[in-house]
Length: 101
Image 1 (spheres, rainbow, N blue to C red):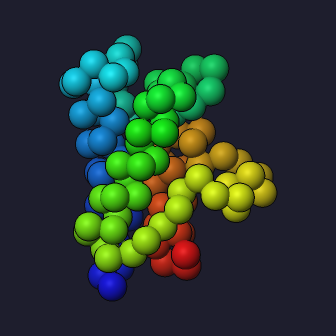
Image 2: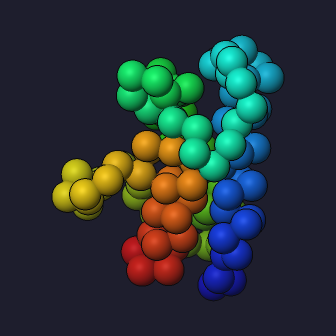
Image 3: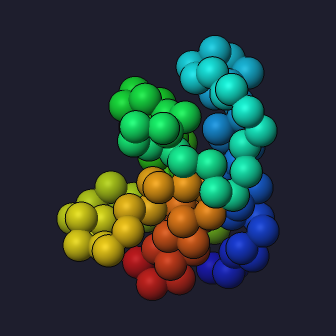
């Protein structure tokens, strides 16, 4: 398995969200940054977009890195901070999943 570079994972998440904006699934009101809130009161993703993002990222990780990951499993609820708080936290969580399952 190829170990992902953190910048590559960030770019992958960023590109997926921008693609959702481009097809009209979401509407970004401002530039998408590392600290952009993804889900919640001020988040850019609604529930359908969040589920789509999870599925798309799982597929992309399998394609790129040959690793099956489950992003929305029980581990996510035991974390002090939700990986869906912002783009940076989600990117870091994905690297953790790829590295350690």
